[in-house]
Length: 372
Image (cartoon, rainbow, N blue to C red):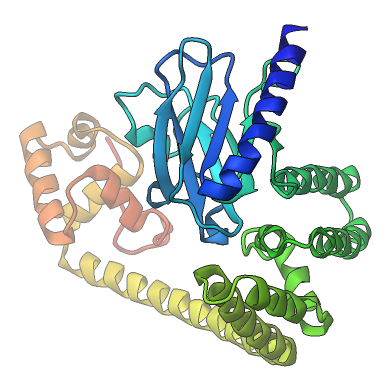
């Protein structure tokens, strides 16, 4: 009951403010965050670039305030654009002493809402029935909550795509949801809503991007949106950005469709040439390695060849000394000479160099003396 009474008082207060806002051009954005700590920072951002509507950017923030002891916050002033824009209010659980983490998206339990407003709006963000913050809005502007409705449609779309993981299901849902979201945006009468939807559907990181390029070739919707933006928001950065993107993407879609098969054959030819080149390289390398082995063998004395053969049999220095009837220090001297001649530094490298190249017993160089 206390929550309902508060909302009623706020509604009456909003009606009183509407008249004064129209006269004096002042906005009032307020709300309640039940689970926030007193003194916790909360931020207001102006989202002029629709491609940056998905997360916090430092250069978008225009105001900061703090949550009071009851969880209330408030932004007010008269410096916002007179026409509708996209805004974000953002709160997270980082400490106020570590503001850099706010903007790097590293805080847990972040809470954020993107909405539409202008310089004469009065908005209130009430907590939900389970005390969740920044998930609904009450506003003097009937278009403020349209982006929340878009988010609900996106969640329903994601569910439809995940219900059946098949190409047929994806093809059906792509056509259905492109049409559903585009119709919703156009019927809203607010091109900013359409930009918000366009950013989602044309995201190069999304699975919808391929269908977007296909849709762009035949659907007059995109040119219609360009005209609506130019009519409602002329000479704005986001209108120019959209028109530039559409022009570039149309060129990409048209040239991509005509040259797809050509590039496919070119890539296949390049792949075959790459395989042949690798085969030639490996064969040449094998021949060179075998030649190096033969060349290195020519440098060894008969005694050193015997020692190499015993090393390949994984015999220790002491065992080699016993087989050849020489002292342990003499074996070590021979092995050091082997390292220098073969350009290696360990017994393992000798094994790697010879073991797979020479069949022991078939080479005239490896005929170890029999023990007596």
